[in-house]
Each structure stands twice: as C-alpha cells, then as structure tokens.
Amino acid sequence: MQLPFLSLEPQHAPLRAELTAAFTRVHDSYWYVLGEEVRQFELEYAAWNQVPYAVGLANGLDALVLALRALNVGPGDEVIVPSNTYIATWLAVTQVGATLVPVEPDPATSNLDPAAVAAAITPRTRAIIPVHLYGQACCMPAIMALAAQYGLYVVEDNAQAHGAAFDGQLTGSFGHLNATSFYPGKNLGALGDAGALTTASEALARRVQVLRNYGSAQKYHNEEIGYNSRLDELQAALLRVKLPHLATWTVQRQQLAAWYHQHLSGIDGLRLPQTASGATHVYHLYVVHHSRRGALQQHLAAQGIGTLVHYPVPPYRQPAYQGLQLPASGFPIAEELAATCLSLPLWPGMTEEQVAAVAAAIRAFRA
Ligand SMILES: *Cc1c(COP(=O)(O)O)cnc(C)c1O
Image (cartoon, rainbow, N blue to C red):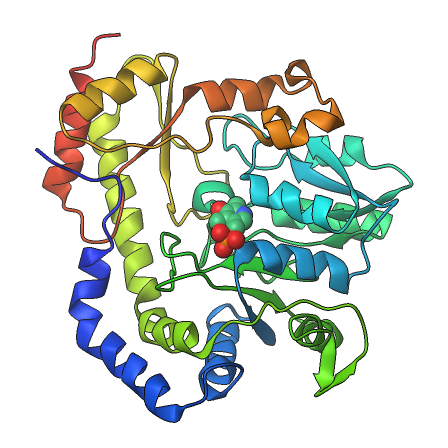
C-alpha cells in the first residue's frame, strides 16, 4: 500500500478545466494586482464566513501581522498566545515588537484554555490570539467574555479551521480581526501563497486595505508605514473556483474522521482526537497521541503510510526564540503533546478502505 500523507489531486483534477479557465481569464484581463478577482473573492469569502468584510492578503503570517498593526499592538504590549501553536502565531507578535505571553492548552483538545488565559492577563495585556488548532474551534464565548471584561483585542488564527464553529457561530467571525491562510495544504488552499483577514469593522477593514498596499489608500500618498501584502488576482481567481466546494470537502473530512474514530476505537495506548462540547471540528488534521509516537510513525512508514508531526518542536524551543529564555519545564502540557502527537492521512478523496487500512496497520503495531 502507498498512501501519501496528503494528496491534492482528488480536489484539483476534477476542477482542472475551471482552474485553467480562471487562469486564462486573469491572463486575458492584463490586470494582475488588486482588480476585480480580488474584489469578488473578498465579497464571496466574507459571505461564506458570515462576516461583513474580508481583505485578501499575501499569506497567513502577514494576515496576523497586519491584524496586530491595524489594532496598534506593538512595543510594550503583551499578547497571549498558545504555547503549542505553529510558529507563525508567535512570529507575528515578535514582528510588531510586542511581548509574547505563551499559555498552556487544554490537553484534551490542544486548544487554548480560557482559565489559563485568564491567569495570564496583566495590566499590559492588549490582545489574545486563539488558534483553532487542527480545525477545532476554540471555546470562543469564554475568550470573548474575558476580552470584554479586560478590554482586550482578540485576533483569531483561523488558518486551519475554515468553516468550524462554536455554538453555531463560525470561527473567523468572533474576534476583532481574524487571520486565515490559503496555503495549498489548508482546508481552502490556493495554488500558491494567499491569506486574508475577516472582520465586522469597516474601519479595521479599511485600515488593513491601506496597510497591505504600502500604507496607501491613494496612489503615491502614503499615510503610514505599510507593507506589500496583496492577494494577487491569479490566486483570487483560483480560490473563487475552489470556495464553492469547501463545504463538501469539509463534510468529507468529517466523514473520514468518523471512520477513523470507528476503526481506531479501543486500541491500547492510542488517544483519539476529542471535540469539546459546543465546538465543531473540520479536521484540517486528524491528530492521535501515542507514547511511542516515533516507533509508531516508523511502523506506518514501513507499510507505505505517510504521517507527519504537528509540531515536533514547540516555538519556545526553536533556536529563533532562545533569546526569550522560556524553559521547556514551564510548558509541561505542550511538551507532552509535542512528544506524543501524530497526524494521520486525511484528505478529501480518501476512501473508507484506506482509513481502515491505516487503522489495521496501527492496530498491528506492538509497542
Ligand atoms: C499555516 C498557518 C499559518 C501561516 O499561514 P501562511 O499562509 O503559511 O503564512 C499561521 N497559523 C497557523 C496555525 C497555520 O497553520
């Protein structure tokens, strides 16, 4: 058996004619940056995410950076982030000159724990960045209540969770400005780099439109120190082809996860993903935990089954962050999760037979 960790072929091959038609349309427009395709995609994505505004950007990291800039978060401000997130969440805080305050997740869901957030709030706290890790919505009502109580901004990192919800409300619609990524492997992926911010605030949407375009609303008039972080016309046109299929792909991901749950139940030493009450999970990743993760991963690789680890080295242990002197002993939950997590193959187009084969291989693993 050969089962890759991820294949985009089942998503893209049936859309090949439509994707190439979109490319041709952009080619023939002779207008490649900030035109009709980006404008239309922003309207369509905002409608899909049930928010008034979406602003297309170059990638997800820039979306986080521009969100913090638009909210005037900078030097002297503390920003609460998960200890166990992808490094992009941390990089954004560092890039605006603010101070990282990492907090431990709920070990059951790997998502931000509102009680840990509350305990980390100080008079210098300005913002919280909840990350809907692996595709599961964080407990946003509790996080928004804390933000309201202490006058803080919330910037959701929605890069992995397009279409997830908490108590029926979509992720990307809770915070003041919410970042997402359309990196090719994400649940909604471009054919290159792309990202966006979503917001209910017209003023914040406008500020981000200025920041992404050299700090300029009017050509050759620069109001502030901006960036070049525009979603380009080609990626916008390709995303417009894919967006109408996102809901179907999400249902497929959830079906695959249900099959995994079924076929993997009752295996000694294997912990399956758990969804918190009130949350939905769109399974960007299907992450299991095993105390002998490395050996299990090798066992699966030997049978042609691709897996990955998200993430093997938490941000506080990256060489880039050694200057912060955050000892690993301060983050026992993140340490444990990083040492035991394993992401199994899950992508639209996979079959129940393939899920069953992965499960059988895991069942045959003798630690
Ligand atoms: C992918 C990702 C990002 C960054 O997105 P890019 O488009 O790759 O810059 C940020 N946060 C999380 C949680 C991600 O998974």
